[in-house]
Image: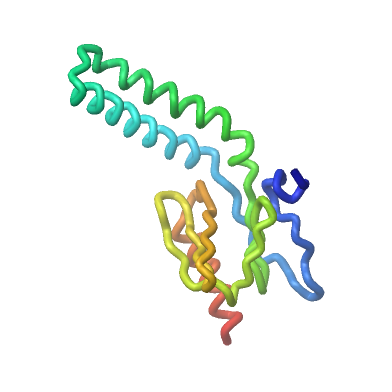
Length: 149
């Protein structure tokens, strides 16, 4: 695997005269809060599934849901919490070699604690675990509006 696909910070070089306006980092508290909600949902779904199947040990669904999300959260935390996106006056540069021209952004959506970037070509990128997803979205929109003027 090339280095561009293992680094959780932007690797694209800035163009001549391009400046970084703001950097957005994954938030540790938001990461763990989102996983707590995911754990609760997985526990409930596991219990409901076992109840619907007539299993007399419904409580094991909660244990399974807890274990599954705990393993996932622990395994991914070291990478996900290193993620950084840089907003320049021309582009949005992200982890794993992501590079989106601001003029190519068709839509910005919020999904949970994430901001979804949808390009005119249909590509989708997630800025995950943002402490204030609405502020992140508004900041990107403000730079995009300045570009259009």
